[in-house]
Length: 282
Image: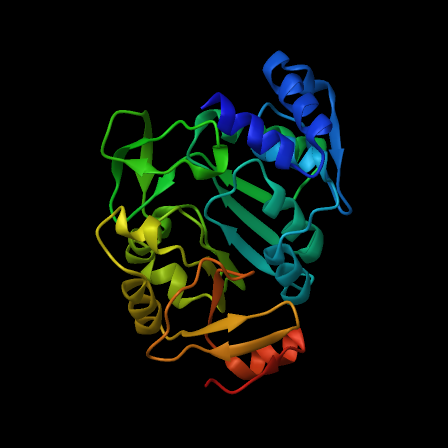
């Protein structure tokens, strides 16, 4: 284990800063630091994700590139796995004060960090919910991993959290422009609990990581089927601003640069909004 850790440190692009980031996290001195991003700031809470962002503050996930291309002033957004708020703040900047973003985060500690970042950025167009999402109301156990962006619903003992259907939340918009669906394998159950919300939504951004789905006994095809039942078609997209309809023999490849897909309700509206190019599927 020690040899593996040393190897990981030595292979890091900036090993000294990596070590210092872990020192800051362990001592909680990180709480004194603000990580400045282009459109917002994040408090350096003691989490590995934020440590990595502090090391490389210029890192921009492909998802954020898509959000910048897609979202417009006045849009309504739902983020189903808000974490500390990076996506929330990125989207909030794009939709402006006339838009609204609904952020859901089940982990109580991470939720408190989310609230702090919303306050830090003086964000006025967000509504937050501290619960997990699924296909029924009740309680569930949530893992409590150090890798905060990997916590998921578990059958084993963990943190007990409330679980609700997304249709039962106080979300009353007549239309949702974008749903960011990221639940570490629980996506199918969120869709099952959201027939009203999903039918009133234009686009869904979601990851395809098959091992996460298999943890709950299903495959990515079931996610596709449920979204298609609600009137969506599923597309791949690229950083070259192209989209391609997935084929029947589609197989997810987690080695790709982008493992996320898009469920799009109205293709012509999407292309007009983003200026993306549709390419033929092979």
